[in-house]
Image (cartoon, rainbow, N blue to C red; front, top):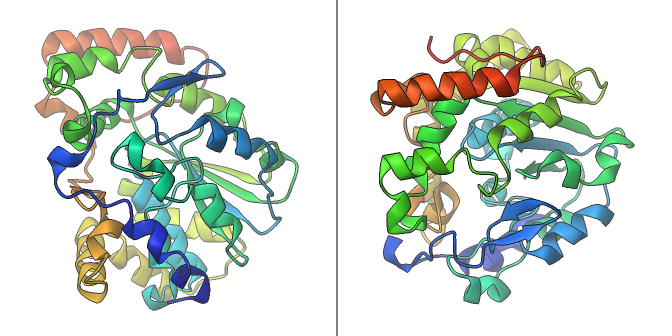
Length: 321
């Protein structure tokens, strides 16, 4: 365990929930900030702080819309930076996000440390995660030489993954599939609509310090994705190391790694692999699970809405493999 991470243990342990019932619905403390809707955990103070957040030239930022494979791309990048050696990765920061103060209820926010403050104390090179909409990101992201990787997933599977993940964090009206489906298209959905989030970052795809990746492409060619990311990060990895990272980054490999984390950290292991120690960050990790949820009418509506929003962008997604 690094000296940096050892200092941060109290911040992580204080966010634990006694049970899923102890987690307050996301709507509690929901607020507007510069046109976007956020949860109580994304405080105005945190969002303000991003505008002056000190970006270093050797930083690596992993940006996703929630439930788009955040932990998958984090595992890939951490292992690349560690030369494939999981023992050299900083597991203490698996549950840290730049703009979020993790707490199961608004009343407990003051007991926890905001993600950006945790990241500020780390030695370089830093690997950081964010869900922040592009207009609110740290301005230095695009003026410094930091590396930014945006990991996007098809919105149908994002919707299904979010529905399952947030079951214990939404009111009764959103625990039913039909209600959650409709909410996904609401401008007041936390972090803003998927379409806005993805398309704004898509505009940076040709930037020298920016890499736009798709979840579905990672499924089709995991080793190829690892090689592409390694090259982007300036890491020259052997074929054997790439193969090792690929094996560790399959769903089976990641679940095995998460089980080991829970064994190695008996006090807080589940805090690192589950939100508030209750909701697993890993579920199925597949492409096309939406077909088990969408009715024909919902699919028709979604396809029409998707076509209208994505028209002219040049960005396409695969919804099944």
